Image 1: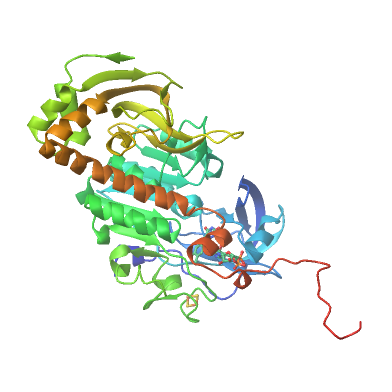
Image 2: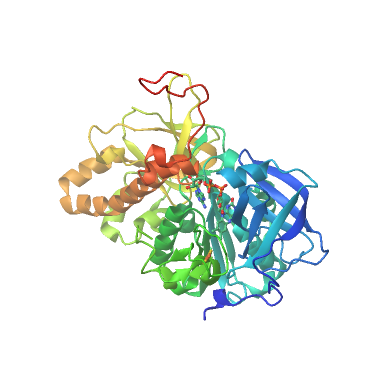
Length: 286
Length: 187
Ligand SMILES: Cc1cc2nc3c(=O)[nH]c(=O)nc-3n(C[C@H](O)[C@H](O)[C@H](O)COP(=O)(O)OP(=O)(O)OC[C@H]3O[C@@H](n4cnc5c(N)ncnc54)[C@H](O)[C@@H]3O)c2cc1C
Ligand code: FES
């Protein structure tokens, strides 16, 4: 069993098939199509989770979707999700208001290898809304900063207007013990930041390939090219972790909806060491 | 503004020269000058003769495309340790984009016309140069293709573009008032 597959103590789910009621405490529009929900448990129990885990979020009368937790694992009194509205359920969720109720199952799945990475350099490569599932890992790394070597956060977005958690990225960028670089695919003149693909940020180095754990999250094509670029720099596949997305229903390994090769993304993932996927990652039919 | 100083040690430290033999490096020093650009300076304009290329030491340069009646679009930025300009290698030796400094930029300007002449005379030098430049060109091409697929864009548009998804397999948009009457039947 790899480190990413170790479940977090305290995240056991009493009845994984029954949604628990949460109230929308706050809703924040991040980008034109992306928003963050802060949910408060009606039971008053803290919601413990490990960075990288997800919940099944139920919008009553519309449907249920898997969404990664984007909040701080050290603050389990709030359950935070950052969601991009792409279809029926997520668009309905964008219309939620403070005080509305949603159902929550979970937390489910494997986590980013934040414990296994202790003593190593950590490089985080992420794009678009992929920063959201990695944010809990970043909170964890920063809360335990002395346990890690160099930490690099390399983030890519479509345009400057699509940069998620921009203020937070700027704040992290101001720290002396963190390398944060942002690039966009296109911009109008006047943008003074970088323009180019996210994989190019890896050329800036800042980590020792032999001693690095890489965490990658974003569109699959971005992850594919990021893994390739990391390999070219000498980072091994068993030190690279990716978070996968597949359609889900049960989230506990019963229904087979999320099957990916011989794995179920809901229980064997979503975070996988890339060495477990290298045979199937490029298979287009999966 | 372009200045002349002893550039040998500076060139040696630039990543572009990794793996290049000393003789070739010395030849290039003869064609090299220091260059400094200030914020918003045009380094070159699209269509200009590609007679100089630059090794960026510090700072960023934006490559821009101008289209009439629209703001210039930045397609790439280049920074420390990168090379600006490879059009000098390919006829008709004209710059393909505008290049504009973002903040203060220190670079080494290489007289490409002079270097082209040297490469023409000494083919092994020419071969070395192409060997240094080809990986740069190839990785820029790879990056440009990735940018083109718009991987963070609207997932529906993305699916249509990358997976050749048929339009009618995507969620239908309601079109009120456009219901076709069945032929031959009276309503
Ligand atoms: C483990 C896991 C964690 C996830 N975490 C997050 C998260 O933190 N934030 C977030 O916004 N989303 C996340 N997702 C994706 C999210 O579950 C889907 O976007 C959601 O299920 C779409 O449901 P819908 O009913 O709104 O859209 P649908 O009506 O089901 O789909 C509408 C359109 O969007 C496309 N689409 C659906 N899902 C995706 C996707 N994942 N990527 C690209 N296109 C898609 C479909 O092909 C379709 O064309 C996660 C998925 C998984 C499996
Ligand atoms: S969602 Fe049912 S098996 Fe994974």
